[in-house]
Length: 360
View 1 (cartoon, rainbow, N blue to C red):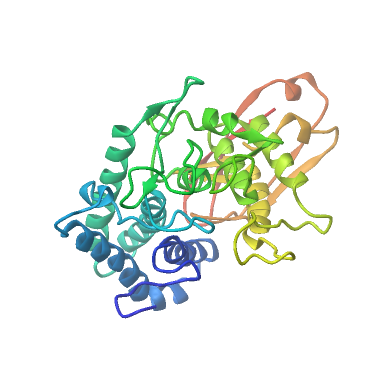
View 2 (view 1 turned 120 degrees about the vertical axis):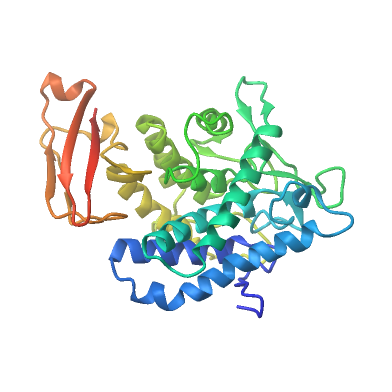
C-alpha cells in the first residue's frame, strides 16, 4: 500500500483490479465466516483504498485535456488486465471498483461504520457513470444482439494499437459484475444480451478472444466466470456446456495454464482458474441473487440420475450459515423429469430467506 492508500499488485498501478479484489475479498470473507474481527481491523485500509480510487478519478478529471474516461466520470484509463500492453480507455477497472465498493457500502451501512456517506457518494457517482456510458456506447452486433465496449482504444490513440478490441474483450470482468445480482438487473439493456455475447465467441465450448492476442486465444478464467453468469440468467444447460468445456481445457493433473503472456513460464499454473472451478460448483447449488437465495439453479438435466442425492449442509451465505439440511433425492418419476418449480422457505441463522428451487 502506498501513501495514497492504493494497493499496488503485480499488475502495477494501471491495473486497479487487484486492489479492488482485495477489498471485495475482505468483505466476502467476513460475510461468509461471520467473523468481523479482521474486517473491522482492516476497514480503515479498505476505505483508504477506495478513496484512493476516488482521488485518481478526480485528479484525471481536473486535467485541462481530460481523457474520454475522465470526461465520463469513470476511473482513469488503465490496464484491462494481464497481457494487455500499455494503457487503454476502458471500463474494466471501473466495474471492478463497483464490485468492491458495493459490499463495502452495504456492510458500512449495517454496522454504522465511519465515513459510510463518502463511500455511498463515490459508489453512486461511479455506478451512474458506468451505466450512462454503457447505454451511450451500446452497439448492435451483426448477429442481432446488443453489446458495449469495455475496452475501446489505446489511451491517446484513435485506434486500438497492437491489441484488437472485440465485443467480448473483458468478458470475464463483465460476468463477474453480473452474477451476484448486486449492481445491475437482467432487464438492463446493456446486460440482457450477455448470453448471446457469450455464445457468439465460443470456440471449443469456451469463450475465446476475450483478451489481447489472436481471436482463438482463451483465458480459462473467463470460461468459468461466463458459466456462473449464465446460471444467474437461468440458463443451466448452457452454463454446464461451457463449464464442461472449461474442464476439458485442464491439464491431466486438474490445473489450468494461463494464456500465453510475457513472463509466464512453461509450467505456470493459473490458480484463479482452479478457484473458479470450486465457485462454479458452489453457485450451481447455492447462489445469492440480490436478496434471494437460489438453490440448485445450476443443476442441468445431465446432472440428474436415478437415486442421486444432492445435499446442502451448513452452507455459508451472505445471510449467515444454514441451520437446516436440505436434501433432494432425484427419481425417474415423470414429475421430476419435467420442469418443476418449487418454492421453499428455509430459516437461516440471521434471516428468513426466500429460496427458489428449480429442478429439471
